[in-house]
Length: 547
Image 1 (cartoon, rainbow, N blue to C red):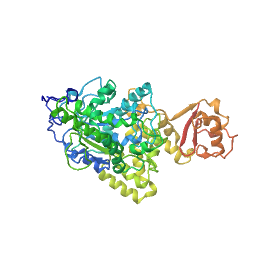
Image 2: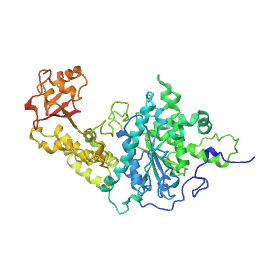
Image 3: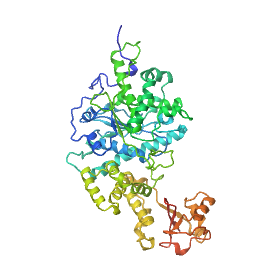
Image 4: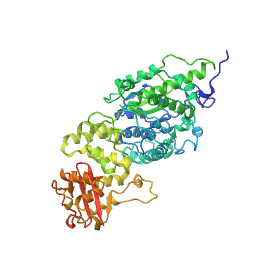
């Protein structure tokens, strides 16, 4: 019987200057620093599918991170993986050639074979399905227009972070063996899996990817997840099947779709590493298994043969070599152990229009003493040895919260730039510092109002103003509830009155007595003859300028 390869499943590198078995480029460049060891030293690795990945990254590789576009912004739960991707770029694993926001604009086929690419993959197709990992209910479906809006917004957010993070990180971690020139940095390319899944028919998908998956294996990975993830709130597929809400076939197919994404990127771009949160380990292992099975089919099977049915499950840990690898990172959790997500009502967004730099700064400033060292290693680029000295100083003066202040400042500047940090510190001094009447308010207000030029390439170019301007004649002397609603602290008169009744409103740092509905904003309340600081509860803060 004639043995030929299946054309639709053959690696695109077949016949090129790459290993036809693994599709890895014949790279000879040995890198000075090992990115996996760096991530491990920072506590950023939850699991490796094989310890051989440490050797694998001694030469340039291609790595990708999947991003869920179910919202128009990423959140702090995504930040650790983004920082991990930035570490890959900083340590010489790619060559800057092109930033491609759409997969249709260019191809990676012209990339030098001794360099690599970073692929933040925006899941246009899988985003319409929704990953069930760590969820007890099915995600709400998105319209195609909303999904398209989200993809564009996150594309801009990811490329901006990976671009602007380079000078920030290098300024914190200068070393002789660090890449200093742009030519030694990794290229950023954004892919959308709608480009290969959107036009694929159901029968075509089932006859290719579907034949390489086994239901028992997919279910077993979810059981592995509850044991390996070291994350108390993971809802496995098994538990969802037994729950009253159940599990739709759409959600169950997510693992197979993500595996096919890894296979496609491996074929098209020699992608050999996938990054993800620890709840993604099972999905990543599915991709590695699919890549391995595809290689065996392409090389050894007759056209009319049945695909192998043996379990080829990648093992977690060990020193075995695989055609591809997975690196998972710890998940951020709330104090109760729940995963930070976009639909649980507790998301801290990376978009400054959704979560201000001040709120992001306060989020990290509230980090506990038990967690702060871990977060410093993950969310800053300060050298690990220097962090040890910071923690020693912190422990000697716990009341000063030295480590939390450094963490909040570094994380805020990484995400929002220097202006974002200045705004956050200015707002913090207003709402949590001394009596506002004793502060030099001019530079503080200027920091909050500052807007860069429209052609700025810095992160702060996208920052909204933290100042809310309202007409003085409409609010001066008027009932307090009116300005509370106008400032956005309350959405209705009922909510505003309830907050006043409960004594939750403060003006310029002074609490308004409960049930004092006759209280109004007067001339004596104005700082600099125009500024009012409003606060509702612990986290609702507004800087209002009456003009």
